[in-house]
Image 1 (tube, one colour):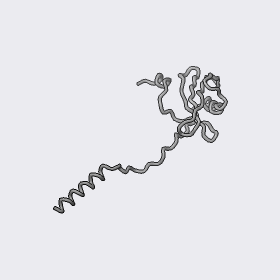
Image 2: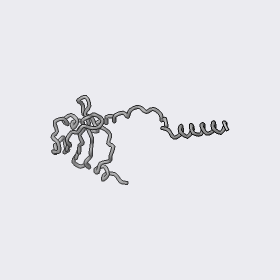
Image 3: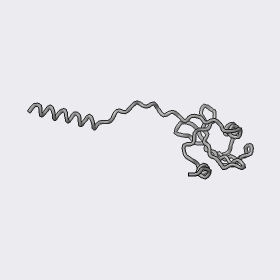
Image 4: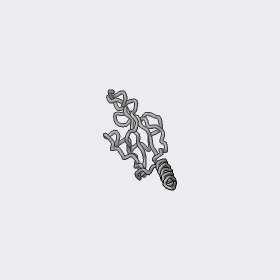
Length: 122
């Protein structure tokens, strides 16, 4: 009978071991999104003037109209602002700018904007 109890104990230990939490590989903390370089002189000027832009009001910069949304505190710990840029002769584009250590920079788009959806085919 003893071998039966040993087999039963081994089976129980295996069942508990397999049912427990799985040990996955250690992952480093998710790194913050990297900065995206301004695409043109308009975007460079926009980043420079971003701290002074009023929220929700169209502002002319070069040959474009820019609407900056109100700043918000992002989960990344940065202050960010959503922007809509309408340049003459071009479809409007959305950008997201964030500030860290006093400097504003663009961050990668995570979601496609309606303007992007309209300008690209399926």
